[in-house]
Structure formats: structure tokens, C-alpha cells
Length: 522
Image 1 (cartoon, one colour):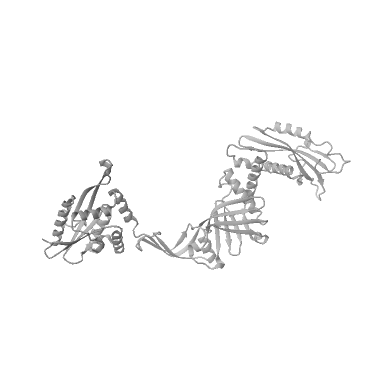
Image 2: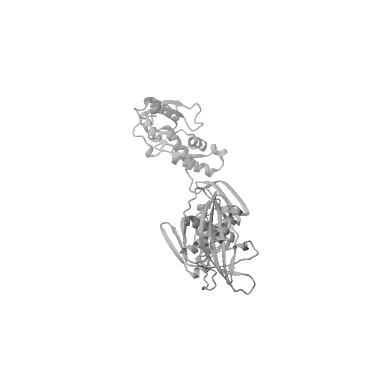
């Protein structure tokens, strides 16, 4: 009898002794196993039988020798079968004496280590069709030697390697097969960049969407250092999504303060070390991109426009505060960055402020001022809105909103003097104007619609005539708040009625020419 047959016979005897079902392979070592072993394990005796029994199944390949070390060259095709079959695989190594009696037995589990060895060998070979022509050596180790030569020792080793339910083991083996040999990055791209240093820096921080490259090679599915797929081309364009560090950015001045969460992107994350003279850092937030250079130059580019930014009132309010801070950034302001538990505070001096470039459209600036003015007016009159207002609808009333803000500011801070030019043949009704000498009194009504209501403010502008070189009539005016109300609808008849009522409230002593001329009556 050959040593191989002797080993298989011995396994059958040991399996029977340990109450394991032994099923020999009908085809000699065709699929990497000689025997199929089955037995049941009671996991928890207190549970019902359907939940407590662990039905163990595994394959065993037998290697028998009269040499001191059990070793054999196994075809890569059989190794592939062993590692890809979801069930446990073992190699049983048997040392025989001259009389073919076992002196030592080894049970080697085809675990994560052996799966990695086999995959690495197969991956480097690269040609699946020739797997049966190539081999990888199995060699027993002292750690796999069993303490006794028996079926129970084999059974205990199998259970220790499965280590729990067979279902959990199947998941572990699947995980080994899918992950072993891979590093964090499973692909690489190498190329030469065609561009100036400034273009390359801008590309690395995402300011330039794409850049021309040459001699490009893409390696995909790299396992054990060997790519599974490669693509090469001489010339092309590439795009990247640059990585960044989470930061909190705060801009503040004496009126407003606004924080934004963002991503700090610097070129060293893409290129490694870079000379100080070319350092350029980008902070990307929801609202804007902030570009900083080594010479403390600031450039702020706002994202979006009125057609594509989110028109949620609350979020746009934050956006608006930030726009107004930056619009006046050449005045006293502070810029602060927080990341990695470190705070950097940069006071923006007049010198630095003059170097800041802020790209804000006039329309966006008007929109932002209007939103902040609406918030001020609502707070002033203690008006709470139940639903989100239509910002585009509010924008139609921006001139009215601006004038209401001026009137309320004048009431809060004393007489606010403004210059204004009125064309008597324009939209103002001449009958509503009262002028004597250089004095003028103008009743004014301003309103805007928010949701389903109109907020109306009644006022009278008092002023005096200014001398001008041209023939235009210009006045120095100061608004005086009279009252306000909230109604559901406004008509032309309603406005004319209210204008007549306002004209009756003009201070009668204001036009007394014998008195000292004041801008606003006491």
C-alpha cells in the first residue's frame, strides 16, 4: 500500500473513533481534497436543538511521508480550490515509521496566512490557464503538531480553528479572501504634469479643474504589489478631488460675526513638500472659497449666484452676514481658523485689508443687505414668521425694505440725515408735497409682503433745499417714523387714503419761516 493510501486509511479510522463521518474523494486529489469530514457540535445545551447544534463540515487533504518533515508541492489549481471554497480546508500531515505506523501528525488550517500565500503566488503568475502547471510548497510546522495521535485531537483542532458557528467562519473566510494582500489604496496613477508651477499649485488645491498630463499609467486592483489591470496613454487631462482637513473659519467685525465649517486644502497633501514661495492654501466652505498665500494675501470667491444658491431664509441670512463682513473687510475685522484643537487668529489690519480681493456681484450684495434688513425689521416689530418666506418675492420690495430700515435706524439713533433728489414730475404726487421756501415735507409709505401679509410703515420726511450748480432740486432729508401696521392686502385706493391721512400729520409749525430752520421739527 502506498504511503498516501495509508494516510487516508488512518484518517478514516481516527474519524470513526471521534464520531466524525468520513467521506473519501472519488477522484484522487482532483480538487485539492482527499476526504470530506462531517460532525455535529452542541454549542449550548440550554438552547433548543435547532439553535444549539453546529453542523461542522470541512475538507482534508492528506500528506504522508517517512521523512522527518511533511512537505509537498501542491498545484496552484488545487490551492485555488482550497482558498475559494467557502468551507474550511485542512492539510493533515502524517509521519510514518518504517512499519508505516504514525509517529507524528500535523493538522494545518488553510487560514488567512495560507490564503495570502496562495493569492500572492497566483497574482504574480498572472495566467490562470497555467495554474495546474505551477506549484506552491506546503510544509508542516511544529505549531501544527497535535499533542496526541487520535481522532479526538484532530476534532479538537478543527473546532478551535472554526472557533464558533460554521456560519461565522464562512464570513471570516470570505473576508480573508476579499481583503488579504490589499493596502489602503488599491490603485496608483503616475504621470508627468504639463503646466507652470502656479497652474500645478492651483490644480492641487482644486482651483483649476483639470490639467494636461503625459506618460500616464493607471494601476488598478493592486494586490501584493501586483496590479490586476493596467492602462497607459501618452497624453490626456486629469481631474482630482483634493483631500482636506476639517476646519472652522470665523470672520467678525464690530457689527457681525459668522462661523463657517470648511475644508483646508494645501498643495503638500498632493505633492508632498513644496517651497515656501509657492505656498497657497485654499479653504473651501459652503458659501465661499478663501485663498491665502505666504504673503498674507487674501482672495475670497463666492460660490454660486442668485440663480443657483439655496434660498432658505435662515441659511441665506448667515450667507448675507458673511458677505457684508467681507464687503467691508478693509475696515477693522478679524479672521480666525480652528483645526486640530489649534486656534489661529489673524487681525486684519488696514494694510492686509487693502490686499484682500473680494469677488461679490452687486446683485448678490443687494440681496444680502435686503435679507439682513428684513431680519432687523422683523425683530424691531417683534414679528415672528410661521413659515419660510419667499426670498425672491421679498427681493421685489428691496427698495421699500431699505427705506424702512433707514426710518427705523433714524428712530433708534436720532435724526439720520440723508441726501435725496426728487423729480417733481416723477412718481411722487405733487399734491402730497408741501414746500415753503427752502423747506419740504414728504409723507411716505413703504411696505413689503412676507408670506401672506404686508408690513407697512408710515413716515414723513422733513428736509431743506440744497444749493446745486444744476437745476435739479436736491434736499437734505431726515425721516420721521409715524406708525406701522400689518394687513392682508394693499390697493392703490388704500395707499392714497393713507397718504392723505399722513399729510394731515405734518407738523404745522415746521413751515413757520420766522423760526430757525431745522431739518426735523421737535
